[in-house]
Length: 472
Image 1 (cartoon, rainbow, N blue to C red):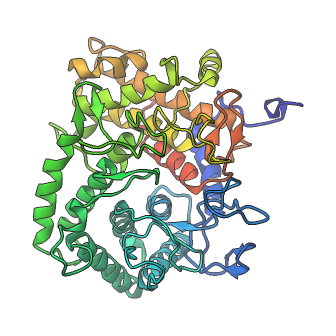
Image 2: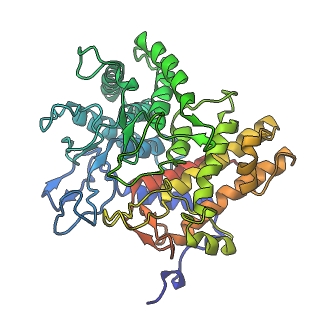
Image 3: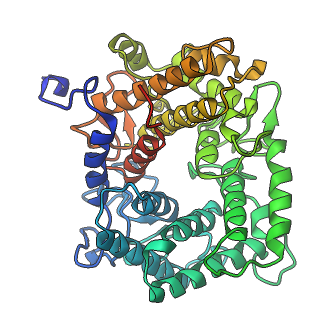
């Protein structure tokens, strides 16, 4: 069979990443319904509402029940994915006319309200504010509770606020107010149980539940941005209590033995029936640093925090050096000057095509982009402070980027940018003509699993936005 790498494709080494991002943005935008551009769900025979975000236009034909093999059905609106895409729409650098941006974001806000208003009738334990997944019509899907969703959605709406009209702003204020009430209240309301931000929730990988570092980080960032908002959105006094509690909770995730933050606060053990041991180091820590607020000695330059850098280097090590988990494709890509491609966690057995627990997992596009973005943020902070992290916990992180704590700050910053560029160029090289799916094959690098994943596009765009203007 002829390799697709022999076809005419974007020249990964020569292209300029901002130029590539314009095409990636157009590919992401294909998955976003808006007024005048909607989708049909072939399985359900329904049409999407304006504002729905397709996680991916991939679905099984004929339909296959969840958990019974693949291909998976991703013709749904995940609250998290939609919010992350909306953040890219709201970015001032997005290649959109103001009228187009306003339309997209207005539709996003209105669709979020539709989802919030639709009652969850299939099971009383699911609350619409924590429901992670909805149909493209805005109806709740039988899915897990993921309390990062309301926070991420609210962060996206705060970013969208400047672009939307007064009528939609009123909806936005109601939407955020309802999300705040959910996070500050127990479940069910009036039960006397702890507020939702203190409760167990499902991780962003939707496989395990506990006290999630990722959920706590994005909730903390939301509370902080809400407290500082200038849009006139009311801030309940309990928000300050939430900021204090979450700020104190996140450091408890640190593990000296592994040298990284843990995905769930200990004591925690993975479900023995799900084959997720070990679950750390986990890439959701990097995502938490990008979308949330994490512990840092220097609040103005959080990406220089030694424990974050130690966590990141431990994550990368899994896929490049650890004999049992490293991806063969990364050795080949190193010879090409690309990569590495990164995955989620050491015991990942989800291949995106089936739920076979005997099939090792693969690199994820969004994990790789997120790590590249982290490199850019660290580079920016090094350049801004003229200081190179010198804590021993940061040694491996710098070494992986081919730099040292004794190097000059400008040299380290440029090395970090090159490390980020190598990851993004690896994605370009392995992409299907810039179309980014969920995963790449660990052996061959060919794309596999879900095609055209919205989160994969949004992560790439976010990384390029974070790339310093002075990068080599």
